[in-house]
Image (cartoon, helix red, strand yellow):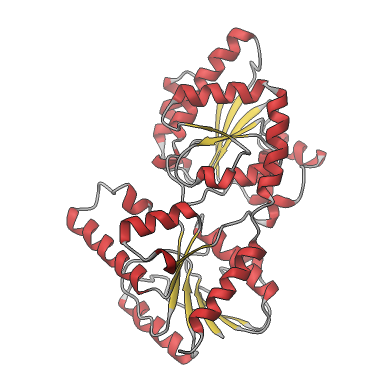
Length: 378
């Protein structure tokens, strides 16, 4: 087979992690088929060098321009590609002269309407997305929840959609942090006391304001009991500075001195924070999959998370799940997990087991099977 993969979003959160891990695993498992990675040269990062059957083809960075439309058509024709995999859900028309598969991570744009868009634009977005999905040879959904949403919203036949789970990056499977690594975050980030952790994107559906409110209520309870008076909340995420509501929430709740906003940190540092956290808290309102709870579980860190969307499917019985819209339910769960040692021990053991159930090798082997089915001449 000659397979093209659109990698133009490889530096983004979420989609980029998925794309890098899929390509890294394909490169390890498949030395027979040819792969043409369409994107901006020099953006592959730590997945290079790749074997000779992987070729990077320069592509227009603006994937929706007219030039990009013509260029994609030419690249697929010139390289006689049997198949194109777009590892994210696109909606504007593109020139695709061969069968294509598309990955649906979530349908957030259609579940939570963007207020800045007019009704006409939203409807065009919806109709074009529907056309992309209905014309795809196959669709990869990252969870059964995302599959069900795709069927319900866009009336795609369920048999056309293959559930292929995400998995955590191998960087999170390196075991516990060393003493030197613990000293590093203590010195570099001035983290010297027990802490709760949130890590992920910073956006409204991630529910970070309620995390801060629940943490403030928790501090009040612990103060009455004379326990964990030095407990902190650490928030790691992209572009925290663009969300002043978070700092306002911490001031309003009176915990501005106990909440730390660290912004982006590299994976090799993030794993140390996962490992050292007392609890990982992730009460997201909507997730197509939700990798951070699994990343925390791989470090035997207890998790408090949502009972909604795809999260129960991902975490199984290895986390304490709460109604993400109820601040006091989140607080009570944090209080219980913080102080109940038998529960902590149970969550640690179950979390390690749950994180081990998701494998990039297994997911990519299934991708390859679908590639072969789609690319097979009729």
